[in-house]
Amino acid sequence: ELLLPPTAELRSAYDCLWPLELGGWRHPAQPCQSATLRIFYHRVGVQGVPSAQQLLPLLQRAGLTSAQGRAIATIVGFIGRTTGQDWSAMGLRTPGLGSYVDTLQLSRRRWLVDGTNELRRPDELYLPRPDIVTLIGAFPDLYPDSAVFSTLEEPLCLAIGLKDDEAI
Figure: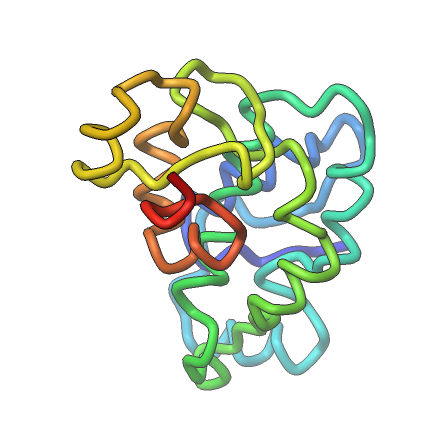
């Protein structure tokens, strides 16, 4: 199957999750810059972002790595930032964030990388707000990895179940 990632970060995430030698998604070496070509791909059914059903087997298998957790965060973060935007002119299909959170059960699975590079469930981690860090300490195993947190952004982190100051 062909997958047309809209950004270089998503292309790297796809390579991490679905290596070609294991039957991974085929995609161009560089993101498609041509709106006309992207619209054509969209019309013939080429996806820009994998569906929740395509990610589900990865989350269900044992042995998910921190690199794969970061790749999933990249995809979920992209969907969180683009949900509700009209990308049809660019020929990009993005599923709704609710579909991902619900189908993948993101709040109940160990996929989110913490500050010690371990995978945790979102409900095991706190938002890295200064007031929370002051109250419970700067222990890296209590917070998502800083790069992962910036990829997901705070509203999405709350939506997938990270704890805020009310949980203290």
